[in-house]
Length: 364
Length: 117
Image (cartoon, rainbow over all chains, first blue to last red):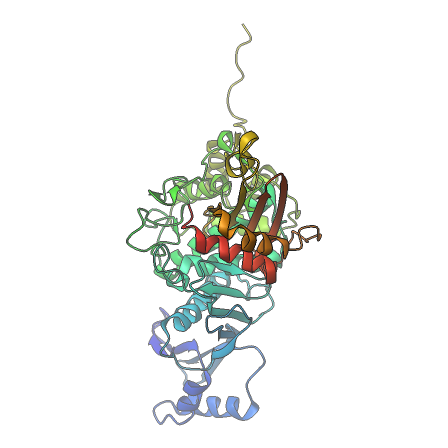
């Protein structure tokens, strides 16, 4: 994307964007932007770096050319061609223009949206904080009803067309899957039982934050739904999960009712689904949504920052809800009293921690 | 805390029968996990003239083989497969990444034979 934007400083005219190769070549031929053209020519002569960067060119009041380089995604989208063989055939790379296949472009854009959230909100350069390339495979399997993270890439099925449409349609789904990559390269939460449910919840948090960041939504404007638009119209449901009201996302004659609990008293013990990781994630999900709405504004700036710092601040791989709650409280205290209060009240509301301020009962 | 109604991979009493039903052949598959976390279940109780082909499908599966339950990544399916061949019960949990060969053939056959629930 190349465009003219205001920096808020009248003295500057800025051309900013992630500059793919074809646009860099076009810029190099520009008559209008002579200095930028020379810079682009030099970049092309020097060759492309292994990892992409955002090149920001500004022309100062004195006519000098200011060039700033910051992180940018390196995306590759593959097509499994309805087989279950990974990675599939490479169909779009970072410098390529959009292709005719909507799923490819949706995946590409979703990877970019997630990258931008991590960079803008948390100053994190990709999944590992070190510019790791982002890989995705679309059209996995035959009417495959799932999207998953395989440990190094995200994989999307097309859906069966009866219950699920294409999984690339939801930015929150893409952000969720890449969220697993962030978790894997930070705390490495074990995907079983309570730490697994925490893993799922944090992936949901990063998924909805990606969507909210992309749409520039505040916490009270957001839907707090994960996977909105993934169900076909035949299904009685809004989305796969509701972070604000777990257990209410769908209630369908065939699929049954959304089984997510919203409070620790309803925690589900089960051997299936790695110990109910997609079920019990409803509890920390609600805590995050409540905290974010109490703080107000952009969720990634208050509660989101506390969650991110808790995740990346030495959290044990086997941490449960209460350990994570304590970590978020520690992080929130560094951010400010408003965030700390909101986070504490949210964890109390879902029964993960007790309200320390509750007055002791008179023993008489 | 709540106990999930479906805590065991397959409800043996419901699926395989007891007492006078001990001559039944029942094969049941439960799929859990996945991004959506939706539980799906398929079950087949073949007619007598189809029993031999179903027994062959079941026998081809390596039931006694140790399967590593952990799989890399997240949001993968987990398949719980149970077979009752008259008085014999077999059960295995197979991660999605390992659902190949005879396991895949058996699961696909059960899914094709039942619309699921």
